[in-house]
Length: 305
Image 1 (spheres, rainbow, N blue to C red):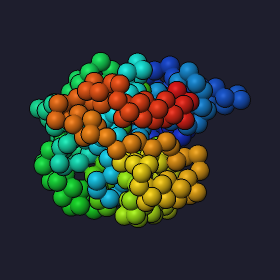
Image 2: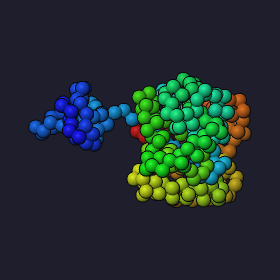
Image 3: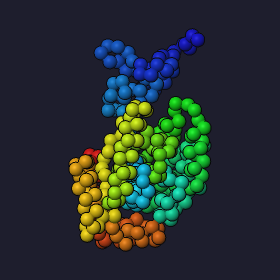
Image 4: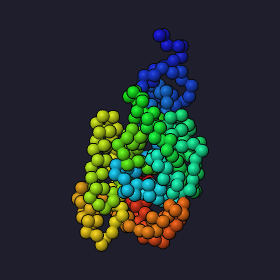
């Protein structure tokens, strides 16, 4: 097919388009270049003026249940939001525990974003201050089936494409992942730049970490997307229990500085969801609030924010 008059091939991706905006053309070393999007321009010449803003994307994951993933995702997101950053919290688990813990329910859920292409900025429910949330419910299991029926190479990137508008509004996107090897979690890892791994201080939780590391290697090898480990968070820590101390030592030996300070076992932390509050709201002077503030401080520092 002959190109239409005035069309040019994008220097980066090769797609043909008509130049309509200033950023779509540039002179580099005396050579005229053309870019269909700001993403292609940034990839080719990397100029800061036209580099698209990108949220920091974090998946909170451990393939074993009962490690404090949801609690960590909620309080990490809330703590970062308290520091004035705009944060989107996504519930990637069909159990819908984030909505139940915060006392919120969206008219639309992550299912509608994934399957129907609903706008995530419209789907998100305001929670507190700088914190919004996309909730989930049992319908998310149908999204897993929908993904499984797709036989195209892009089925692992559906979430990344659907969530692209979030970069315009949020500085952080935190996703709570379900405890499974699933296509939804594969999508979450393709979307994320980094993972935070809560690990209960027991033997089986350490086994779950090994499974996560294997999954990360598979995502990198098969899909070409490297995800860095920002930190491993020991949870349900009790200094009186020898197994807990041994678990911390094992994590520190393996992960070094990426093994963050532990979150201590606490009744207050267990009670907070029943009151539809974060730990900072329910028991701001508790040891658990101190532990999660320390986690947030370290996490933000690790990201250079």
